[in-house]
Image 1 (cartoon, helix red, strand yellow):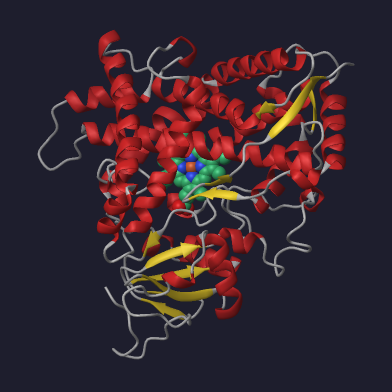
Image 2 (image 1 turned 90 degrees about the vertical axis):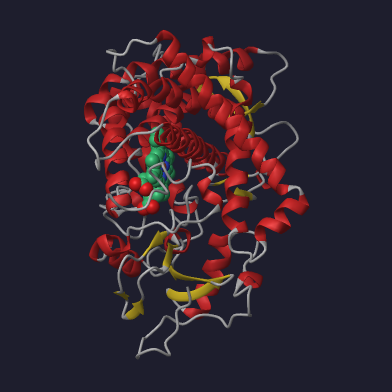
Length: 484
Ligand code: HEM
């Protein structure tokens, strides 16, 4: 659908000139968030581009984000239907890419009730604390090796995040499970994420599907999806095998029950696609974003030894020496850790463009007319580094958040790592707890150094990803058990 100002007197946002068919695709580099940040520095905080023939309005200011996510939340909380995304979302039957409406509302309600409510958050505490102890045990073994060697923190952290998410959402204890190799879980997540990126982008090329098939991309994508789908089938089969229909202990059992229940004509009917759609969201969004957040935190700390030292001294002074284990009560005490995480979210928002929105009626954003059915992207990466909002925006300075009311919960539009409005991340509480608990364990029990012969300059900061942006090169650090 084209948007043009020729009909009526629409005050459309400015934007770079586009070419026929490909629109502005040729002006976009490898990463959308950084390319769009650069273009917005020339064309302003609300601009109109064309991805192929699809018009896209990009918002890169705090004020614009507030207008979209607060003032016009209801008019803008649709999701564009990218054909490619349909595969991994089981035909948009998930939560993240579901069209705004009754299905989305029902699915989100089930997820909040079964996964994210305060009650569930409390009752899953033993899972998170237990997995943290395993994390410490595993790293202690590496730290005790002589000569000392570095660990691949990406692997360790992904396994930690995946074990927690899969136990609380899928009721699956991966340490005792024979159908998934925990050491390869990060491969499964990252392959799927890359595939989703390929698919989402292929949509914008007029002959995208054809090009993809020729280049072999599509077969890779299909393989990644088949692996993920097989994993979900195993989890479901496992639930049916142990089948205790009255035991509503996890979201899978609850949804399986709903699938089998008769429903009144016209009312919402849960199907296997809905179940797998939610599994896909939880597994990919939950594991990936949480693990990546922890990795970026450890990366920035490794690059800033003074901050690392201050943080570890503070944590150890507050918690006291020789603790056997960290509990979630400890999280309340470690203020400096919270602001380090906040500053890392600012510099490395794991989902820099949030998920795309779509206007459901004509709206005005920052005085510009945005017609119905227009795709909207909020560039939080650009907002997070906007000198109008932050001094020395490219520097890692956690102290900027000390005695500062700005938080990450969607009410402060200059910092939106979990998005905002009605499509705000429902896993925010779970995500924050996993990240804080994992980092607190890593930082209380271990001292960290760079592998021998390397310096801070060798830490590679290159990014990779589509919707979720990760550190490309795994982070290798040497753990040493802290001696009191
Ligand atoms: C540090 C961890 C996490 C970060 C940074 C994060 C970030 C985000 C962001 C930015 C969005 C898009 C919000 C928007 O469009 O305004 C989102 C949506 C979503 N996230 Fe998260 N997330 C995290 C953890 C989780 C976890 C642990 C889960 C589930 C287990 C989860 C499930 C979802 C779902 C289902 C949506 C779609 C919501 C909707 O469209 O209604 N996320 N997340």
